[in-house]
Length: 187
Ligand code: FE
Ligand code: FE
Image (tube, rainbow, N blue to C red):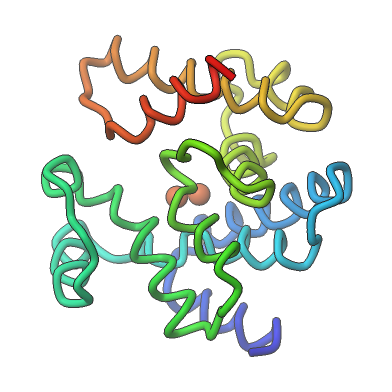
């Protein structure tokens, strides 16, 4: 599928604001790919499509995940928004004709990360957090700098702040976020 058609299709699925965010992730990921020697085109595409399933309602997310036979954890059952990552990868594969498994994995793990991530997976996880439309939350300036100087340090910094935030706001969290943090903090 050419980029033009991809963009047109994506715009039908998500809000203008979410599209702006996706473009932000796309270019940020492309720049990071330039710094770290990853595939720039793959980074652009993964960035553009990472939230392609975000436009569905919570109810739809749960229904579609079940319908497509995607694994739904207990945590996802009570937090269906989390499913936009897995569903996004499903849409990327079947509606946007993406066959690159690395791109599909980057979309699947963009919210939680996972232990032993590929370079592209790290780039999309980080680009989603730091893209220019994001609010200037705690340590953002420092995290943005780390994104272009020390990838793993940046990853741990984001995970640490995310976990701190979830703990203070008494939200529960996906066990995968904690697993990713434990893996990289001990690395
Ligand atoms: Fe997302
Ligand atoms: Fe996003």
